[in-house]
Amino acid sequence: MWVALALLTALFESGKDLFGKKGLQEQADEYVVAWAWRLLALPFLLPLLLVIEVRWPAPVFWPALLAGGALNLLTAILYMKAIKASDLSLTVPLVTFTPLFLLFTSPLMLGEMPGPFGVIGVVLIVAGSYLLNIKERRRGALAPLRALLGEPGPRLMLAVALIWSLTANIDKVGVQASTPLTWAIAVNAVISLGMLPLVLWRWRSGRALQALPWKSLIPVGLCGGLATLCQMTAISLALVPYVIAIKRLSILFSSLAGYLFFKEKGFRERLAGSLVMLAGVAFIIL
Image (cartoon, rainbow, N blue to C red; front, side):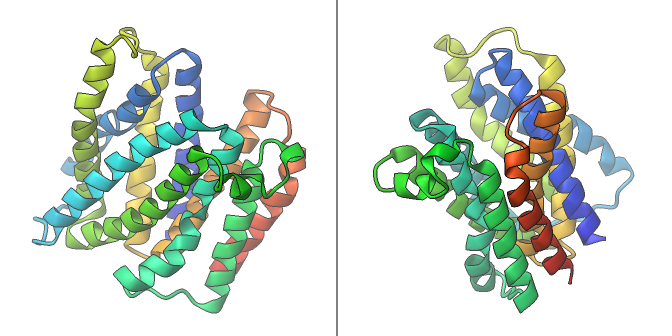
C-alpha cells in the first residue's frame, strides 16, 4: 500500500509542477504560485474531515507543526532565491539530494535505518533524478557540483535539500501524533498563513499581478493537497527515506509529460536517468 501511495505522491507532485509552470507562463508571480499551492489545497482537504476519522493531536504535534511550518516557509523563500540567483540547470539538480541526506537524518531523528537494498535503491533514485535534471549537457554532469564553489544559487538549493531532509522527518512526527489528514491540513494552513505577509507585500509593491490565472492555480492546489495527503499516509506506513525517494519519480513523470504535452526536447537523452531511477525503485521494493 505504501508503494502505491508514494507513487501517487509522485504523480500528483508532477501535476502540481506542471500546472504551476503553466501559471508562471501566464505571468503569475512565483511567490503567489507557491502560496496558492498551499492555500488552495485546503478546500480539497477540509471536506475529508467529514468522512475520514480524526483524533485530537498528542502534545508533540504542536512544536512539530511550528518547526515544520517555519522550516517549510524558509525553504520556499530560499528556493525562489536560488532559481533567481543562478541558472535552473545548475540549481534544480541539487534539490534531488534530499533522499540522500535522509539516510543520515532519519536514523538520528526517528531511529529509522534502511536496509542494504533500500540504501542502494535510494542512492540509485538520487543519481537518476540528478541526471534527469541536467538540462545542459554541454556543461557536463558535474557542473552543478562545481558551481557550489562559485555561485550562490546552487548553495542555496543544497541548503533547501538539507532542510527538506529535516522537515520530512518532522512530518512523520506530526503524522504519528495525529493523523495524516490532520497533519496535511495543519501544515498547509500554517505555511499559507506564514506566506501571506510576503504575498501581500509583493502585491502592494506591484510585483504580483492582480489578475491571477485561477484555471492553473486551482489544479495546483488540488494536486498539491492530494500529494501531501498521499505522502503523509505513506510515511505513516514506511520509512521516510523510501517514500521521499520514490516521490522523486515526479521528476520522471514531469519530464514525460513535458515531452508529450509541451513538446519539450531532450527526453530521449534523459532515458538513462529514467532507467537508473526505476532500478532504484525496484531495489527499494525488494
